[in-house]
Length: 358
Ligand SMILES: [Zn+2]
Image 1 (cartoon, helix red, strand yellow):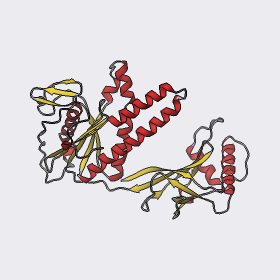
Image 2: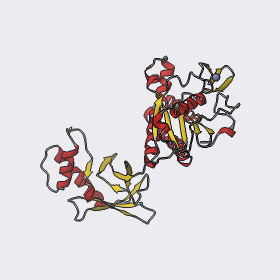
Image 3: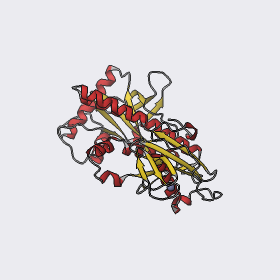
Image 4: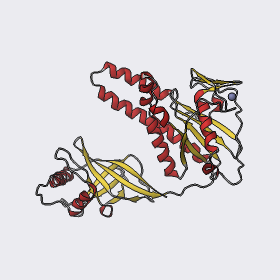
């Protein structure tokens, strides 16, 4: 299976002459797109533009699409940059070789595909597309069911069929704290946009760490990652406050990150319907009640988000297409819920049940 990803790169330590040549090429390209006559524009850039752009608006600038066979990337040993990237151009014989810093490593086994040169806030960047072959894993030992809740955005329950074991994960408070802090700062400040951007970056950073840990865990323990699908909830009207909370919680981003990171390592990623997973007891299947983050039914009291994640894991294990991926040696029996101590409504649940603390 081939997996594509975009590596974001910034141009660093650009000499004046290279900067001038890039700017000239950029200007010529934008003018050519708007049907002006220009000389000194590489024909390959014209071709790729006709392929990639349908309509061109006069008020907008567009990326330059760099054909993959014209790109050349070399590793750079110095601290200043990670790589040298050769930008094909008419402005300099042999192309403009620019030092770049990238947000992730470009591994040797990756193939570089058509990439883009962009200009934002007066600075040049590159979106380098890379593609690599990933072998899809075949034998799994269980599932990691993840509930994207309201009180705690990410709660996972891992059920390993092979070893009949269970682990619980928890994360929520940090994201909520970041959002609360920035919502306060936003109200205080005249420049709300600035805070929005900072909040977005901080939350995103946290989410990256959380999702990477979950996927690491799934990989080490040979688990299929299963996330509850929220489609139903998004459409229900739960009142103004609840609706606002739902939209501020970054469920969509978490799902996309998990899906992408699983794909990247050949781990199977599935979404299952979340219907009733929050209302039914993960132990006996009966309908229960939810109160302040606690799920209650006859004889069971459990943190409501854990209950939800547990049910997602169970539902996944009941699906034939998931059972068929579990190792041949593993008989699919459900690990029993063996905790008496998962009842706390907050993230302060006893740590002995946590495989990982985020
Ligand atoms: Zn029950």
